[in-house]
Length: 434
Image (cartoon, rainbow, N blue to C red; front, top):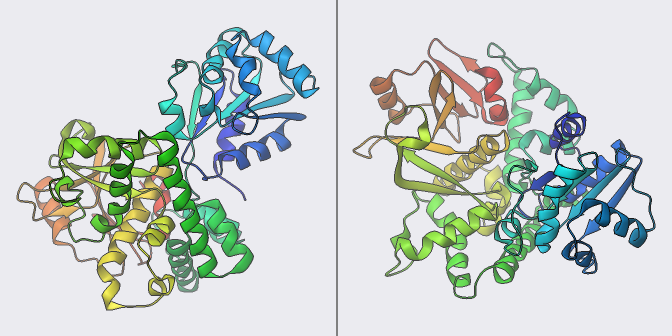
């Protein structure tokens, strides 16, 4: 399964300032798979070490942090000769060994010639407390579920990927291609970008099989809550995690602590949200009522929370897959939530670390996202269908006169004097259009 992050791994290998690489991301987004494929293709040999599968590995790092001593021990243990430039050393599930995590610092300082990639869950790395995090001594790379373009590439629609990549702001996609893209996009809403969900669909073409796999993934996340969280926090984390679809399904998608349960207070549940964010399972979008640089300095207290994957959101909501493919008036509101979650997922995957949305002081107008692209801040309205009317976007335009109004919808690519409509399936190319 081809992943776009592979090119970044190539750049890392060729970099003159290469440090040990720490690959982060939620569980089951495909970190181990892509690193192993990278090793097989780009190196003569791969030394794969998994700290959860082989507890004996811990002793090589617990007793010494000297890189040469560690290399000598590993050569004997694995009966292998480690040649710095020819061998990729993979330290998987590194969150299980704080000392191995800390050793990356000394590999960078004393033996930078070794090619090392460490991988682990965001959560475990954040919570690793038996050794110091190697701040400034590692390169960082975060991995996400498959984007829409990666998804259709996995389904062998390579020509459509090339078509989207070739688009420019004055392009218009021929109607048969546009309609096919819309169909594939709806398929992505159901399946999402978790590699095992995508692989299940490729193998069986059955939505029920996909949903079953997605539910299994959700269960493994719940098991992680038990494994990593304090016992007192587990019920709160579960409550927050299971409540997110409910909030997204409402017209006002704002996350409100008091709505979690009777008597719920923010100070009791803030840690639960941060826990889920640290695990890479959710994305925040913060409310802004003054669109100025830098946006993060104008955050209000209100915020929205999105799932890391649209397919998992549908599974967590017990959403029948067929309803996404049909026009059902009972599905209009949650369809908007699903599409907005998709947009958040695509924006995070192209490197936008902080998401923001705008509301006016009266709370009567709201623009789904604000997009920073110096020297401008653009409003980005997400539309699940083809109706582009938006009083909120009009209100924003009247107040701030942005250089361009951007919508993303199921309509074709179209640029007017002061507005741009990007098809939802091409949202990941927004930087190209700007």
